[in-house]
Length: 359
Image (tube, rainbow, N blue to C red; front, side, top):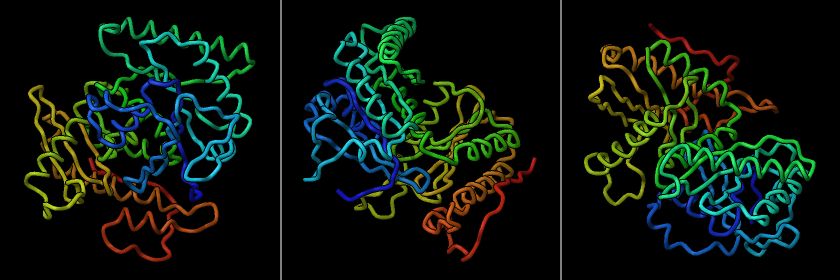
């Protein structure tokens, strides 16, 4: 296996907890119903995610019975715990909400925490309380009760082992948008420029009087960033579903090469959908496979030209964020070429990340 400096997300948990299903639905566009026929993962599977220049990482899907004390073989190479956890940013531990967490499952979680903390203290630990669907979870109260019980059990297990650390918990299901929202929160921790991106979105929605704005990875439908307003699940679902609508329509009417396997999305992609509740959904391309999806009131969308101008300013500022010189003083030229339509100017450096918008 070739060495990679890309940040990685580790998917771990008991067998049949739904790890591979999550990976296939989110990153390989598999239908949730097709995951019923997936076999248990017998070995390490690595998925490289590089849909756009902003977020590039790896997802390592481990089998449920993995033993870190034994050698782990991948493509004829022995992986040591240091190789596994060294560049890991987040460890996602998946627990089946329809089964009571066994002592073995909690024990494995404690073991992973102990091993990883000894190698990399900066790992984020995320717990997906998965499969919160079906007859067992017909109300939100039942889901919250399940989350509280699992949190208490995990806290007791770690307290007995002498660990005092923060875990993030998410209620997830592959049959709705909850798994995409949860993975969005995890992926955002891989983006060091996230505060600057959120600040740009805050300025944009303030100047354009938008209700909400998301920056979506078009392929996976994970939102890379959003503004400071709380995420309403219904608004998120509307914006996420809009991407599907735009791509589906583009596949029918907008493909130049019908034989191409590429997704129907380019630098000209945009769409306006007017809802019956006096709201407008507006989608604009801002970078390679990256879309800005906004929720705007109808009366505030009358000045669409001004909104388009501000979004163009937003695109320019967004590209400059990723052109800031790295710690060695080298400009990230590869990202510049991916983010600009024309040829980049040589020797350009960015001292400030500011955006000036018109009211």
